[in-house]
Length: 253
Image 1 (spheres, rainbow, N blue to C red):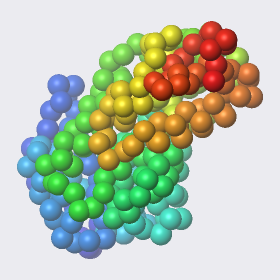
Image 2: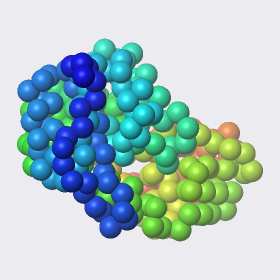
Image 3: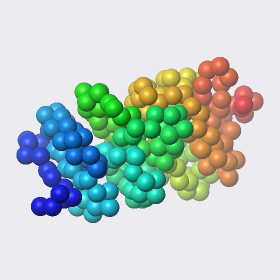
């Protein structure tokens, strides 16, 4: 086996109550980081594969179908973006979850990663126990979503979460991962106002290194996607509070 090939840890599968083992693929060029992450995740009960060449990630994902991919976000932007697009190529509710690992800690870099579709953005150096907890949180949010009702509707918005399909005024609309998840959360609690902090906790999984600005950016992108059908006004700003999904157009901001 070459150094770039996927190496699966010799561990017993970790059960999450649904009979499935949880597979994590680490794409990282730093050998020390790979060994640390592989050992820690294996000890936590995950089945772990590793790659130190991002160019090999596509074939590894197609072959091993991991539940989560952890990628070194400090790769050249074109490589990282291409990999994200590949992972999200079908529907936004399917495919592996994605965690970015990066030395870039600015709000701009974090928001950019979240906008592109990563589920969590972890800044280096990081606490290994915290990272393991984040992996569990991202996978747990996926499992919880599967347990919820598959079809959600709000006026002209219809969402079929079994296939990641959003229809707005009878037209299919494509959203990025976090946009889809945020809109789904709001559609399940219409007319209720949520603060940015609550939305970060419920949708982003209590990502303490992601600020309220990430919510604002995601809301703006959802509104742009809904604007063509005249439904952008459903997603309303509550000044000094946060956001809500409402048909009361008189309160739109």
